[in-house]
Length: 570
Image (cartoon, rainbow, N blue to C red; front, top):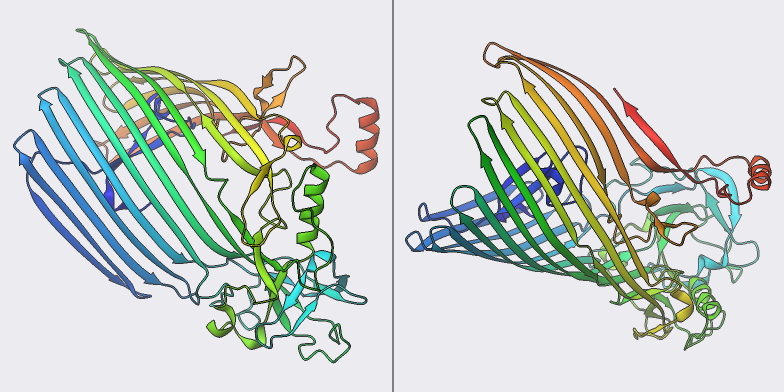
């Protein structure tokens, strides 16, 4: 997210930290986008020039159309830059508009919309050592079919006596071995991220004490990413090529990958109603807040995910495929066949990473083609035909001050539900064809439902201008672990046990001393935070695991994983 449309960022703690979003013990941040302002007309422009050809321009315009009634805001940005890494670049373009309408003194309506485009060539990341050890391993069937862009040579990787080097698997840091500027995805391996948002916000005030806000949001994202499947660097320890001729690259370092292309995105719709009531007496001021909200998310898993593979019609293809899958076994067999026929592009470091070698996105005519990425990105559990989340929630909280601001209290409660529906299918193994057929055997539990509660309470006692003590206790959760992971455990009664929803509970006590009008301050804090359901993998030795499994056949997890409580104090 680019900050060109951001007005301000708020840091929230206490009940406010989770009345409007998922809870964290440390609080949360709230980002406010720009709105039309009734104060004055303004025009701002900013230009930024920096190293690596960074050129960025921003424009911010505010106009009062009708005094105290209607104001409009428009801001835009365009940014381009390169990098010290070969071929890496980024172009960003964004347009944002806001209309603020005040039909009555106590009513405010804001409409905001944004359109953004990002096009970049990204770094592959750090490259890994798979050559520094003396031992070799036999090339597996998944080694695929190798293509050398530098020479046009092609051969099947697996064969009698064919080996791969081994290494530590750690990052290569020696620039004499691997130049830090190198990137082998090439100049055309772009990542595109386009998104559009529309938000409407209505505020209604009843006197000084009662306030309501209704917010609705629509968000759509579209991504298109060209990538590569590996960052491992090997040493070619095969003295000959598979046809028996001498290997001209014997003992040379290389990396290899097969190209991928993933399209993704999704649509999100949100609506929220919030209310605040301010209760004031001669000795107390209490702000009571409540919210009701609904979140709907439809990730774009149904969109194509491609990989470059040897053509199924090519004589070098090994194995068979089932065009129309009827069983899970057929689907698994298709995935295995495509894994063994990956079209691996190999680049020897001595040839460099020039655009003439790495710029080709494929396929190679008559040899390779784009297929559903069954050997890589398409999961063993099946391709998602549909995944949809509904997460309604309610919350209630209060923040009060008493006795001329000598005592402060916080209290909050939030309940969230998680409803997810998912259907899986099997992509047809056809070139340049994306058809996913639903497979009932891949859908044992298409619907998931559970709910969790979170609470927060605290007190601050300010004895005078110099000294104050505090106490805070919270129970938080993270219901949407990742993109709707099905991370619950079914209990004996058939109900979902909330073990695997990440939760955090804790309490802290602190004292603060401030002297010389705040110029000198000392704070001491005692805290105890714990996660009651941290998932750990102690990995006991196999004989011990087998023995314990025999003693506790129904309650011991043979994988060595279990849910434990972890505690942090200080």
